[in-house]
Image 1 (cartoon, rainbow, N blue to C red):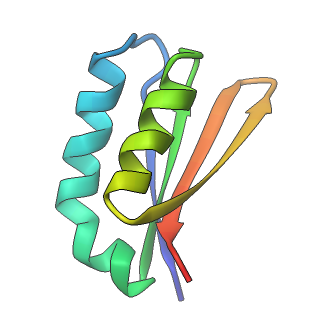
Image 2: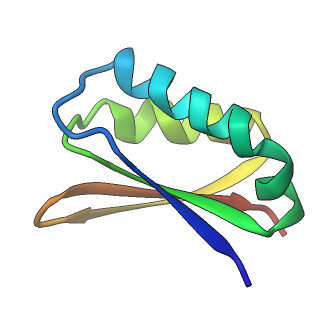
Length: 80
């Protein structure tokens, strides 16, 4: 079963969004790569919808971005 870590960074703007997300990635990188963990980020900063997926891609992760009523949801998980 995959564990999901939720990171709510609404109210933050880049580069803070990216730095907070990188801290979460670094804490969970091995578990994300193993497929036992994924991270879901909620942000209201549109710039983060580009910077976070680009960084995740460079780290070998896969992302999905969805715009919902409460903000942008960025799901980060293992590639496959």
